[in-house]
Length: 117
Length: 113
View (cartoon, rainbow over the protein chains, first blue to last red):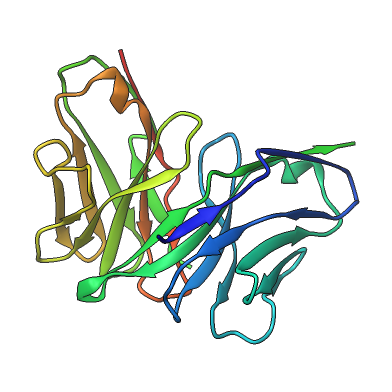
């Protein structure tokens, strides 16, 4: 079954330190994509980073990087130099290809990150 | 990236009534998606809306409860019908025409009393 697992319900980190949020996935598809989103208390979903299954290099976007280990089926998000504004819920998601050319995302349960001053 | 707006941003409704949520995108897109996020939960896809065709609903969601319109390439509506308190959720519109992009609107926070 295709599934996304985030095993850390909550994490905290000191300001300016790095933090890793875990994500593992399960799929039998060869072609898939992995996304990370940030959801602040306002409820909006902010796209952070994307990794395709055929991408050989780990994706990076500013302070965000994705530690993609295909054999282990993990796609952990690393946030460097944490800021107070990073406090939010973080969701890992996987893109699935459906019949008819549709795609959809399935989401993990999320990890709530608290950044302490 | 696409800029997506939703109306209303939040609403409080009585049970048994219906609410229509609007989603507007600043560029033409083929696929629009509607997701639901129940309190304290993750996101679940309700349906995929392709312009000019009937929406495709996920298991557990039906057209009578969540009718969707997609009149053009920049606009869609989701109606939550005959609401009950269990429908209290954040409803999010999303677009993504490429495999590496999927953007979300700001969401509609619905409370049913």
